[in-house]
Image (tube, rainbow, N blue to C red):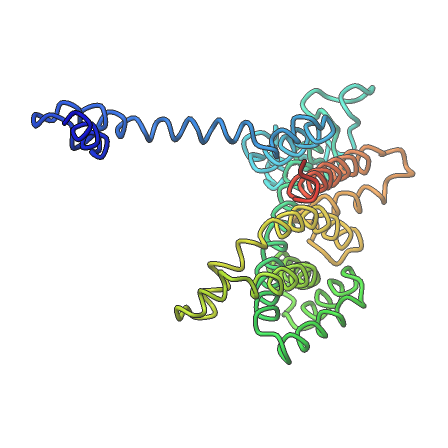
Length: 344
């Protein structure tokens, strides 16, 4: 008789053996109420103990690069509030303050810490506003290139056949030309098509389009390779069997598996886009002098380099160097941190 009761009690769940008053259910409700807080703590703990953050903490170069990039980007974004002067406001510019040296050199003034250019603009403020324009052009051009490249890569890899062959041959043809040459060609065509009074107003949009079109190929080839691998896996075949449309399969199932390499390429190409914009502006086919980017500042200062006004070129050049180098180092770290083959 005892063994029968023991078996019956063993077969019952804790809920079945609870009293009718429901006193044993209260701890379960408390545990459920505390679950979101515990889940948040566990999520934060897992993030702090992740391999990516561990790799970041181990690399001193990456920490310095991240700090440098963060300072430069924040200073550029908040330039209207951080800069001591507004170089875009012509009412505040005095030609009598032109070509002043930095404040630690004889003749310099504390109100212009890095000196002034040939128009009397504060060089520190001009660098902050110029970095803002360069980063904006680089960011939107890479966003355009990433959108176009990822879309073409998904279509080419998933459709295959003639569609894949045609799109990849177009990509191969574009790869045979340097990106800077393609950007120069598009910028020149836009200057010939647009009316004279619209060229300066449309210069930044033309530059974003020219740089974005010249850099979509790498995104497309990378996403195509990932799509060719993922489309033959069982979960994609199961999605086809249940009747999901191809567009939904590509976006929901295939694309997330290609985001890691895409983010790495976007980070590295952001630095290259900023450098391309600086090159075009230095050649005189980028942004006009009324919207000075880092490349425009370097081009203007280059005309006065051998006359002793070295600060007009050196300080924008150093800023561009630090920005491109720090973003490039972050991209290299992301490539290593997100590579599963390097995980131990």
